[in-house]
Length: 253
Image: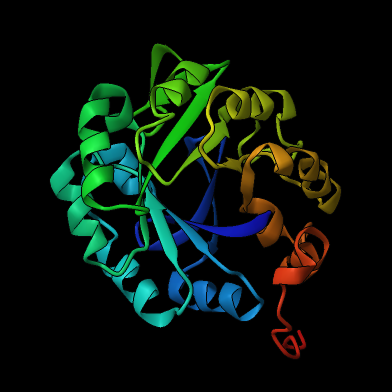
């Protein structure tokens, strides 16, 4: 199981939202490229980007930052947020991204997502963000009647690379992941699942290890890393020691 640092982009800055609320924004860095390089230096094997402007507006506001991040890193980078057309997904893949995450489009036109996954094997991921078990779309601003588990089942044999699942109620809260929700999502589909939301401590990460044999491939961590509640090097050692590489001396504050 992998630990994947997250960088949420808003107006070119590295931020975090509380439960997806754009009125509750905390800025952690004005230089997301520098932050991305630091996560790689500390041993990250993959980076997760969220284009919050894209999710809210459906516009490519942060493409320059995305291009700069992928150019600066040697590890794979994935991105979600506002990817609502095939053209936009394919445009993002030209920016150096390893994977593109589709959420709203997966609800509104699943056949199109399957076709895109067939055209780009291993590079298309479905993001399933749930509020009280039902899928939220368009930057979590709209709620659908679709059960998250039903959407997971829909893509079970689709050819997409993985599912990223977020329980919105836990996102940015540091209150711990929703293990029952994750287990239900793992039961619903044979696809690898990446968890997102709620991790606030090393013990939270360790609690997810029981789900790894069921197909939990990794966990995305954001606020807990920026707050210092979780140290990336320590987390990588604890969760996947065989994958950890010593990044060298850390800077002295």
